[in-house]
Amino acid sequence: MNIVCVAAHQDDIEVNCLGTLLKYRQNGDVNITNVVVSNGDKGFQFAPETPYEEVARVRNGEATKVAEALGGRYICMGQSDEYIRDTDEARNQLVDILREAKADIVFTLPPIDYNTDHMVTSQITFHATMLSFVPTIFTEHDPLSSCPVMYYMDAIAGLEWQPTHYVDITDVWEQKCELLRFHESQMENSRKFGGFDLVGLSEVTNAYRGLQSRVKYAEAFKPCLAWPRVRAGNFLP
Ligand SMILES: [Zn+2]
View 1: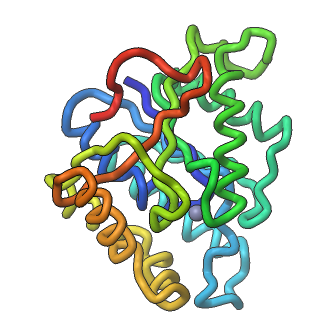
View 2: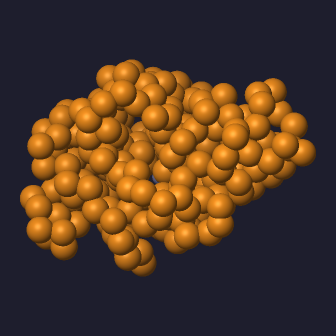
View 3: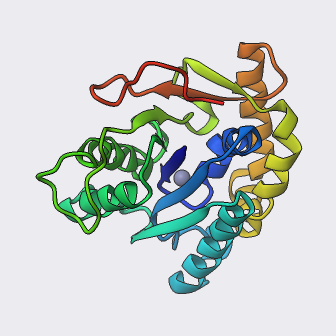
């Protein structure tokens, strides 16, 4: 099974989907591709004097390390952090990534979230998922034979978003925390800038989703119910 996760920033997938990726990995043979639309270069709010190129280099290194620990790979689409745009080029860039990965399942950010980078990423992914199998859209790789199944991840802090599907991540929780700490810069950034770190944020969110679904820790999702992104069967671990 080929899984592609698409997010806006280098730590988004980790916060809301990492436990689920670890579960897929635990259950069998999967290929994981983590895609991030922005270069992350505005992410050192705790050290604003750091040159943008240096910030992007550090953050992409952190995301690569996590993807590799998952046995997967990491792709950065290179848009300017905090200014993500839904353009023809961005759609086709993602279409080609989905085709090259032969995506069966696509995860992305919810259409409503705290940051427009997240919402625009969701929109680009919504459209690219459908275009990935349309033969009149030409990119480097051949069209997929069918449209991937699509799921939305949770919103940051679970606000403005009611998921419907829950994955029990209790037995991979410690592993999730360990990999979250690979984002050293963002652990420090979120602590200094937001008053919590990535582990603290996930602890509260995943315990809350766990409470709702009667396990200790859960990640929560909502299938995209737009044709043809739905397929019969359960594709979550
Ligand atoms: Zn983000």
